[in-house]
Length: 436
Image 1 (tube, rainbow, N blue to C red):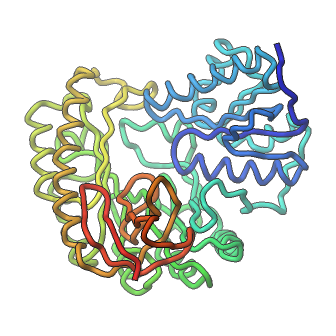
Image 2: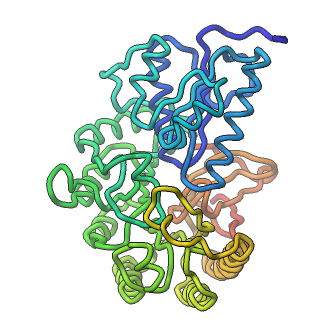
């Protein structure tokens, strides 16, 4: 039985998955607001009459979380606590027929590029004049900045092209306008995202033009940090590093998912690179930008991964000493090239291998963090939580990397400000600091 009053035309947007989904939700929210909807993101008020869930369908865990979230809100609808329930995003793009059959409580499902259709269902207009405008769900001082959609890479394990389509670069003039709008509203850090940043421009100019885009973004007044996430290793354009050296507001930070260490596994994964070329690329990057923070992501338990393959990857992680590292356990995805292979590594073994890599990385992170003790560093303050102000250096991205903690009882700093601090001590993933 309905027990509360719902606000007419209030929409609660729930976002699951990666930063690209956050970006898409922010665009959708701006369109809804322009159509006179009262919009909230993951509101705790429980008074919205409409809920829109932006789903992730990347790997098994993400799909399970998305489905459980949909089912939870379906129960809320059945109880009369919301009137309408819509689902969009990657899971919806990939499994729409099955979802429509299995969860009929949802009023409609939409794919990743069906925002105009979703708006039309809500009797709203797609405002073309708002292209590039968003309602940020992040703190105002940083924003995810998507420069392209989709992917043309043939990676065997990845379902992203099935959900996001072919690579499409956003017009550079539009991106500059978007960056200027963000800066005018107080954004200081742009976190560049795409399925593959390095592919930018190939569809527009028949050449990679990320270095040119970086220079133009670097010139936008008010943008103090530009951060690069999701660069593909094969054919990596080294000119990016020249721009990083040229421009002080481009962070010495690069997120490059390498996925594995053995040539055998990389070949099966269709990554277009060998172990030897990977090692040379890392050496070249570090030679060109000596203090760069290199983040990578690996997959444990890919089909055919032997104990010897895993041990080689673990030894490689210990020898290479990445600044930041994450691990996924392999997920056997339908309609991918790897789905033709036998998923022959038991789930327990996958987890055990992933845990071993993260244990090694934890030790590496602790050792690397000690070099910051006693140094003065520039930190961007993200939030206040518990007894600390939480900030980041240029070597850290939100959510996934290290944080700088400043004791709230002893010091005051403002969220959204850059602060010079002295690093007093360091743990595995946290640095403790005093503002100067």
